[in-house]
Image 1 (cartoon, rainbow, N blue to C red):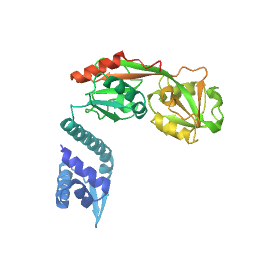
Image 2: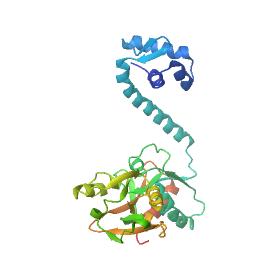
Image 3: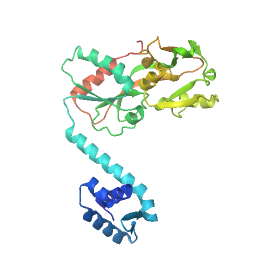
Image 4: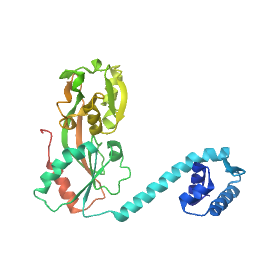
Length: 296
């Protein structure tokens, strides 16, 4: 049985093809690295590296083990990250995980409204993409999530704070009409939004394109609505964005078009993590439950 430290040393030696560099990265001596590898090879019963002069070559077994060592190394980093986050986490702030586009639009509006009656509340916004937020990756420091189309989870308190639809946004120079059929848009360079609504789910945009045999000119991708809007404003391509983000567009630079014969609706959901028991988080979440921005 190998220890996590031994696996970490093997990983660094393999990755850098050098015991010296591995020792420097790990903050230990080169003889310690060499000794550890020798002990590992003795316990395993096969060579991990072949030494030819000053050069180091991984064995076939090492090549197969490296992928697994990468997973272990990644898990160790995540463990240390989470442990350090718990250690440094501040309870003076309500820590909200949200997407960049919502952090620029809906969330500030909600906070401003809440502060009118709760002026001493402090907020910390943590920007991640929708997939990371919904799958709850790397976020022990987050008290609640505000994101698009979060699936309902029994263990989490959730609320819908806005509903809306998606529209086609294009550069002014493309001269696209106010109402469009996506089948006529395949000649334009298209920016795919790689968040949940554009994945291969039943009601997704991507699934609609596949079912209707619409072959868009996928020339760029973005996991941020805001970043896609910036590219469109530069005249780079078209994209399907939520109506909330599109309201921030400079209408001197872009056109906003309704999409015919589609139902690309979305929700903005707030989810309170089940282990959060702080009264300030509960109070703000209850405020979100009573908020409805759909008419905006």
